[in-house]
Each structure stands twice: as C-alpha cells, then as structure tokens.
Length: 88
Image (cartoon, rainbow, N blue to C red):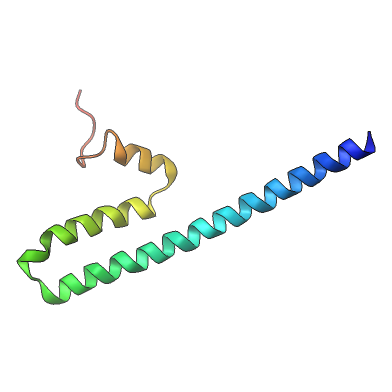
C-alpha cells in the first residue's frame, strides 16, 4: 500500500513539474514569435512599400494568433475569423 502511494505521489509530482515546464517553454516560444513578427512589422513601417502590404497583413494575423490564449485561438479560428461577430 505504501509503495502504491509513493508511486502515485511521484507520478503527480512528475506531471506537475512537466506541466510547469511545458507552460514556461510555450511562454518563451510565444515571446520569440512576438519579437519576430514585431520586427517584420517595424521593417514594413520603416519602408512603407505598397508591395509589402500582404506580408504586413499576414504578420499581424500571426502576431494576434501567437499572443492569444487557447480559447481565443479557437474563437479566432472559427467564428471570429473575419474579424466580426457571428451572423444572427
């Protein structure tokens, strides 16, 4: 019985540490993507070339998606895809 309790405790500990590590890694990745896309937007703002409008729109969309939480991503990918609320 003590062995089972020890195994359960160790498993819970590993899961908690893994969950925290995963969230830290995701936050670092999200920050890196933010820096990357902001750099692209800053470069566009400095040049203001009409040919780069499509790149700016794509970068803005990716920036929004990388900074959104999981529920916001679902909303943006489904019914808020065009920037509006669902039609009634």
